[in-house]
Image (cartoon, rainbow, N blue to C red):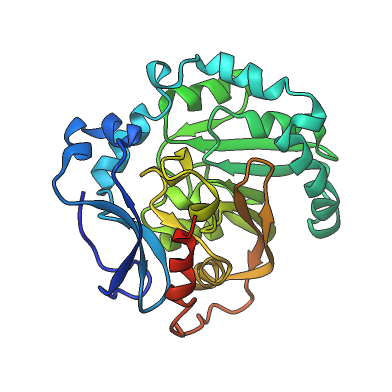
Length: 301
């Protein structure tokens, strides 16, 4: 683990939002000693720009180790196929993926070019459960691709869906083509360099294509238990509307829509649709993106 300045503004002034003293199971997947470091772990907010992150943060090497072991059977208590069957067999009224596809259908039909077959690329495809639901319920014909860092789940998705799924940390150009629709669902919070990831996605997107982003909202710090899975070190950063908008614009995207949506389990998601901006000129960083004092109110449980 390493102590670094703020990812966005490079400032070093920060306040602790929540100190984390619980044993983080994901740190244990990397190295046992990371839970026993003498210096405290915390979710902090930058006092200059308002960005929320874990401090200290994981190194790139530690992230690579984590996602090699992320979905280990001994950790998850079910095999990949059991997970795939459990999620994809949920009744429609209980399936968040099915409900998501139903909301996507009219948007994609209205915005994307009319083609006999469209292409979808799921970045961070997991075991392929979203793509399975999408391919079963999307309007029109689709050709699907995915990328997944954990080998067992990349192989699971490829086998169960009979589609190309790259086992890799995402980088642009893995399939040597551009896509009509790219989904980035619960991925950006795991990325050490989200602007770099978004720039890569822009390169993989067709000129008339659409990007769908779903990321947990920073408000979960208040609504979820302190040791909840989504507050562990798998999530390096915690996003708000102005922060997510800024990062997308820095990657030369136009934000078509961005909203904060409450979820049934008490968590909150930010949902955004992006397309390539016509000009590549980036907006200057205007500080603060959000008032850090607003973030500190999230400790009031």
